[in-house]
Length: 205
Ligand code: GRF
Image 1: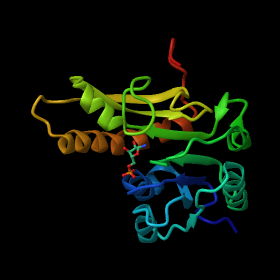
Image 2 (image 1 turned 30 degrees about the vertical axis):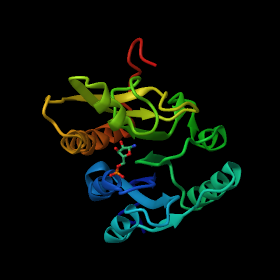
Image 3 (image 1 turned 90 degrees about the vertical axis):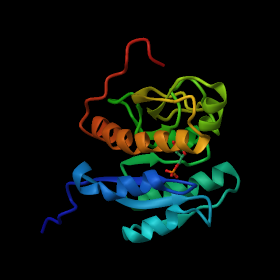
Image 4 (image 1 turned 90 degrees about the horizontal axis):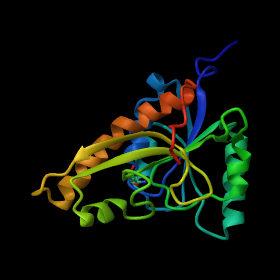
């Protein structure tokens, strides 16, 4: 007999922090046609662990060790759970070719791994992007969802949206605006990749 979850795309979320994006995605599983099979975190006190419990999603703690060992453990879990896509949501580690190759899709021309980054890439890649952008005093900032490649936030951009920074915005107000936009665009980007409507932007990295 067919189960209700048989037609859902099986995904895993990798997160190291608070997990607000992960929570948002877990809350939207039905609308997005996905099943979040697991959360994988590298931090034993990550806020995402409590959020996963709320949605009855199993969490695996794969703490930092030698990259090859850590990634081999992750791949084992993903294989066991028959995961098709990986969504990174505040996962603070660059993935290596080993894991990228396992999820490479030749039709797509990319690995089925996407990430959200809090800046208008290619501006401000890497850690602390909100801090970097805020310090730059740019009037317009934004957030980006992109495919993951071996570089630091360099993969093809799926979706990018901007927000305005007012001159009197505190850093917290600035981050709040950004995060609220992240919660809006990550699900949209997921829909784009899952319904196959992703098109590489002309002249885009
Ligand atoms: C977000 O700002 C995301 O863009 C970045 O890490 C942060 C994670 O936030 N990659 P949360 O854990 O989803 O609340």
